[in-house]
Image (spheres, rainbow, N blue to C red):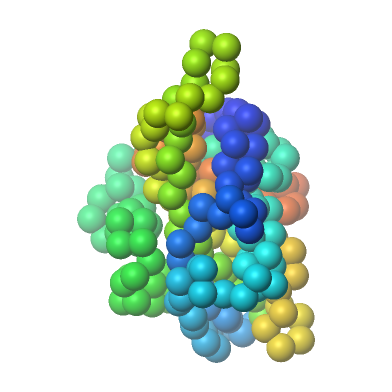
Length: 208
């Protein structure tokens, strides 16, 4: 398990506002108590109403904005977990296509429904974002030149209340990890609202 730099996470969350939004697409699925999909969606983020944008940004932001190295922890994939057909490759494919491949999304939803443990209905949200990481001068002032374009996924699982009304996330992830202000495809940041009883089932056996 690695250590997350809080400043890296805060740098990302500053791009998760209506005016500085870094997300271009959002997809997801609604699951019943038994893990079966009740419905799915996949839409350009900017086509959402301002109210829905704000709601979904609050869901996405909950993952990187959580307490670093307490609720949000860094994990490194073992080499065997990065083989063809495994979850890591699926996430890489979804990142590469910017969530525009419904077949890959359906495969992920099926996996989540089979493995995630929940006693109530829940929603799984998946966001695709890009961040043009600026260079920093020696005095930590940002320069205009870009250092790299960080493409990433934020996943969040929220219990549902009423008619598809999401509550605050109880689980989520940021992939690839944003480490040293750069993309690390061999690592992932995982969020658990309850750090004493974390969900480990989705990535079980895949970390060093």
